[in-house]
Image (tube, rainbow, N blue to C red; front, side, top):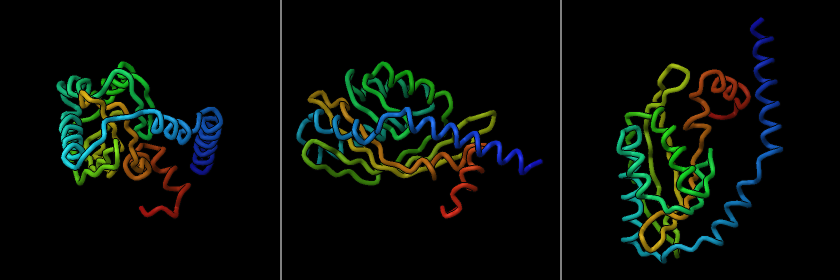
Length: 190
């Protein structure tokens, strides 16, 4: 019986994965196009550090009433943002996403590990730990990542591409899917 349920669950996940792959546009093409077309201010070391500090300060309020307002001040109206799981081109949709996220996350701790730059891109290396509510339970999660960020002359983010590993930071912790993920990819360290 358990073998049948496992087979059925994996078959369902596989079908959804294959259909999602067919219908989703390539993030790489969107990223390359947005990165080339979006021009931020040329940065120096201090400006890259300031971008990292503002970014981390705003996300340290995730899960609190202040977060949505803080995030709204951080981003420009028109933008490109890809956080690995979602992609947005305007602040209104991004803020709706943040409002939903804010309801599921608590006890957030984001640390700035380093901030570097090249031309108009700041590369913000961060660590984030948080509690995530899903399906009636709360899981403590953490992940490391780097965000490539460009800002306009008002210091608002106009471009953000996050690079992080959702397999370790999220997927393995999800009920049912996490177990299936670990089973499908046995070569990944547990």
